[in-house]
Image: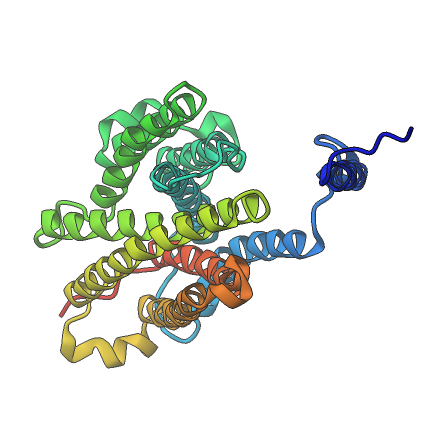
Length: 360
């Protein structure tokens, strides 16, 4: 007598076998964590990193000479080196603050996976520490990057306002690195806020008219710009990390960032315009944008920011229409936005190193 399985059992067995076979095939095809295939960097990502490094080096090193050409202005001592160090400092600040910001956004997304992109905060804090240490040595060396250690006057840093602010930034980045490796990495926001405050005070010495107003504008401007640039970088890293396991959660993180980024952009533009009008009165803006090094660098920054705004609008439009192209539809324009924002960071650092135009 032949015993037949109950109706539907064979189909269930066949379906389960097929599912197990597909799972085994996927396990064989997928690279194991830590394997050479898993560690291999996609060519597009490697090119993007090379572009970021090239922009970070070329703009501060070659920018001062190009901006000062034909203006009759004298470059401050050590301008290329100081501009390069300040580029690294601004980039480190943006990367670390943006990571803390997006991490908090991701926690509020329902159904978000526990696996997140590897933390860059400790590395950013280390880079910021080295850049701040280099800038402190420049202050100790009389605004020149020292070539010999015995030429430094480290004790003299405590005797000057710029020296104390430089030491504050060094210590703040060291504290941010310790916080990033602790059980509460988000606590790094406190020492990073100290870096922003020190930069705002440094940019507006007491001899300037209404220095507290200028420092307040710079404080808001630098904070919003760092969150905007660094937040986008980590939002894209999160989107890419969750592109298979939780694409909708990744798109929600990018959407949550985009809503805050609109406010950050508005605040950055408003404070930047106010700071510009303080240093370049309305009647002289048109002439100084082309006749002074500060105006030329500012004009280049405005052009780049306009490009960033266009890419941001394109990315947001694709994100809203992501039902057809998937959450990664906004990835390409947003990645281009990150690259242009890297140039904006470098140009902003250059803006702090060129001579400030005379106020009539």
